[in-house]
Image 1 (tube, rainbow, N blue to C red):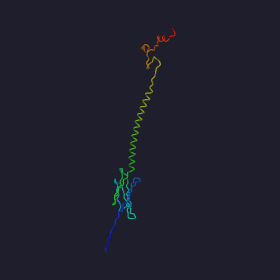
Image 2 (tube, rainbow, N blue to C red; image 1 turned 30 degrees about the horizontal axis):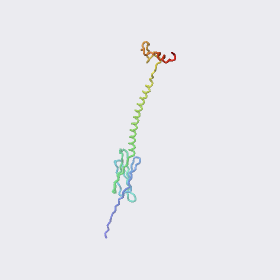
Image 3 (cartoon, rainbow, N blue to C red; image 1 turned 180 degrees about the horizontal axis):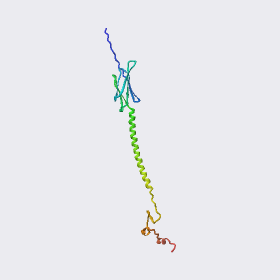
Length: 178
């Protein structure tokens, strides 16, 4: 009788997750057989740790420190014989930093425009108030016009008011006396 010995190898796909806390990102490939390989894009300060579980599967935990990284997106790349996966995580600190920088620029422009508008308005109001303080003074004395004394002999004949009676109309309207 022949004894054949067979060895069966079973591959188990890991469950993957990506989390973040205090500038450190954790990529986890849990309960995989064989152990998964984890790498990061962009490459940086990372450490991998492997735990062997009681059922023979392995969990790989990779931590990535985000200090001195100027990227918008972080990708955890998981390689495994059952299929590779990549997990993307937008970096909230970087997004908030860009949004706050954009808001600073917008508020600065708005403040500048309001400052220019306020300055222009104050100049306009200053000129308006200054011109309204110039009062035109009317003279009641016929001898003074615009602050100059005028002699009576210098006056033109039309400048002197003369009251003339209209004899024709006065006589025409008086029909009763006759």
